[in-house]
Length: 206
Image 1 (cartoon, rainbow, N blue to C red):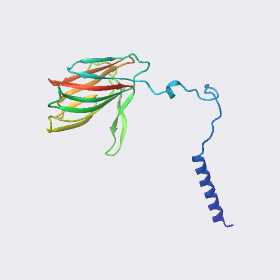
Image 2: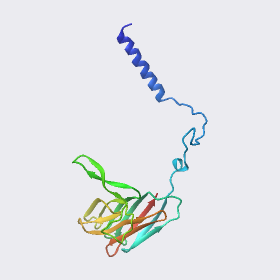
Image 3: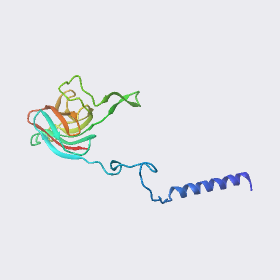
Image 4: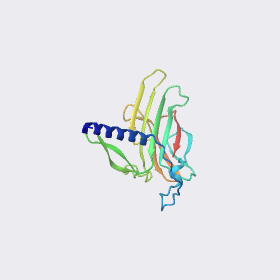
């Protein structure tokens, strides 16, 4: 038997063994995760996280506090819905926004093809808004809509706010920002809302 033939047989056996291992079901002997013989597993590791959710209509620029009595510390807010003139006859914009309620960073550009996590660590206090709380989280939002039925359409994606219907750039018609949070509540400030407009938001806090 030649060396090449031996190497071929060895390769075939290795390939057959790898395929067998890949699709084999191994039985696990009975054991206890007691923290000594095996790692201890907590309920949070295997039970899906709890959440609170609801629909809220904002019809004036003001500070809104969402209180909840939940057995968990909030980590994220997902907000979807629409901002529109009341009745939706003239302006209607659909949006999605998120807020990360924990240590987080925005991507910073390195060159035209790569980014890296950097900049200030969120949450933090914004020195430009001393009236806000100490935990302003990282936020992002995007929207799409039109000024009237069949009229001019607008779309924009941005950071720093949960909702921001902005056109032209620099003019906000409806804007909401998470300005503080803790285990029991989330504070949302609506600091821009055109007369006759409302924000209909579906909010999920997890």
